[in-house]
Image 1: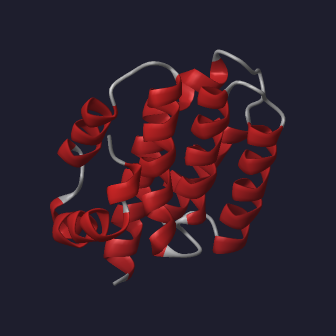
Image 2 (image 1 turned 45 degrees about the vertical axis):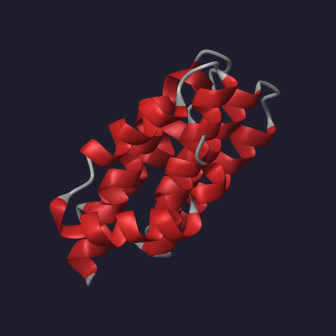
Image 3 (image 1 turned 90 degrees about the vertical axis):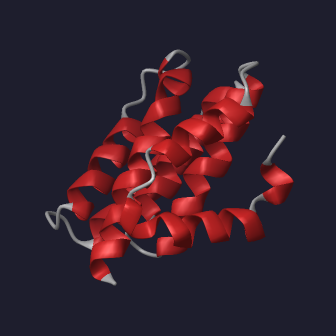
Length: 141
């Protein structure tokens, strides 16, 4: 449903924002942060999908402009978070790329995944947990 789609976008934005400091420590580029803000605006019904798509392209461009693996993954998490407006399945991107960012920074993927799942809205919890079990097993420690 549209309501579930918006919940996914909001949650994806939270997941991307959680690792955004790993990008911002290496770059002054604001596009990933703006992408997260656009994802939240789309979730509130304030911007069209087209604006979200443009923000996703910009966040991925920011990822290509840095060399640090944690920063690259964090920017990609932001790009996928906002791309959730276009297709709900993109909401899995931030959890994959957040884990990659955390691993590249020397942190715990299992700790990051626990943080993500704790914030997962009830309305989409079963859906996301099922998708994670089916599709993300290769991306977990």
